[in-house]
Image 1: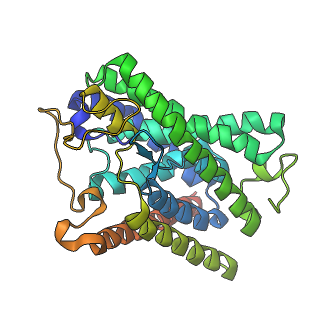
Image 2: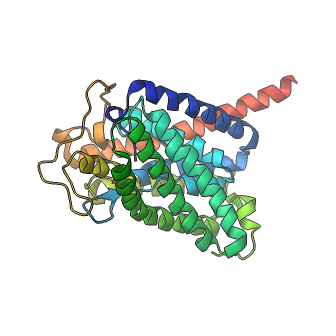
Length: 218
Length: 117
């Protein structure tokens, strides 16, 4: 759901940019205060993996494809929604500037949708579901699904305000497609979490490891 | 950085590179959710059926426009799949290098601040 420049007037893009920069500043503060030396390899590997997975579109039927966003995964592994803002901003800058995937004037909106909303929804949905379900997969799958679906619906509203999509049609189509794309998001998020817990449980956020019902052997 | 972390870094970047190269060959070329929605609202696609073969990209005039050096993760038609691989490898490694560089810079700044106070 990378909004291209052509879908939004410049002045609206500027407003989203200002809001996005506030969150980027907070994400930089998070990196300064919370990133310990042990987490550096995980940050770099997640950034590269999210970039690669974001370009891997998988078909979701109805002539449509979708790919991972990765905000929920990053926020859960590194233990903060600001980690998702940090990494997704980096990935979106590379994608937009080098590959024309997502616009320049719309990058602020894309950072808000995928990084901020995706990160916060994924993180808090996961930690809200974890004590109830007591199962990593059952908590992470719907959290990641929501971290794909909700940004898509917000994106539909933004493009309604931009005069590009009619509200109802946009909400329905974006909702239907991203309900399916969210299944990809959920599945890859759960797989990646299990993989990390298997190979390097020490690099996983303490709050995930400390939760009941999570064994380090996945 | 200890040996285990170095191994994790190398394994991680290799997995990311493998995914990015596989994507060149196996990723679906169907429009993504947002592009599909744009095709629907411009009357070129129905919700459940693929877009018509003559579907054109939705472009609105009067907006900012920018040409990226490796548009759509390719180096242009002359390069074929090799161009796609080069573009994806550059993107993956660049994201990795900027990520690790940025984190080191931020941490260095924190450490130097601590020393002055």
